[in-house]
Image (tube, rainbow, N blue to C red; front, top):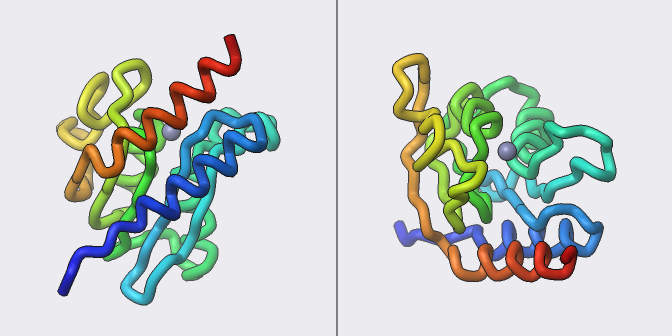
Length: 148
Ligand SMILES: [Zn+2]
């Protein structure tokens, strides 16, 4: 079996988020039969601080499958998940996490609380970082530069 990255779709969601004036982060969830959900940040649009791309994608994928867990599914996200999203990824029992840019400011996987290596973490996905990291970073940098 050859590895196929879905990060291009996540990047497209991140770009769409920037076009909506949201922080450009995009996420895709892939199940055994293909793409289950795609989402970008919508915190401003929904007036919801929890409307991160990962959370929206997890909700949509669970709704599509009619279940509360995503066992055996993979999540692609352009930025290192924050602690809230990492906890949601753990609760969803996602098998693998692929992320792009690291997030020294708000990340919760490789830095900060390192949610998946915490003793209270009941499920940790396999983590692959640095996937299309440069493209993800460039999107974020351009977005924040335009806000100054
Ligand atoms: Zn998050």
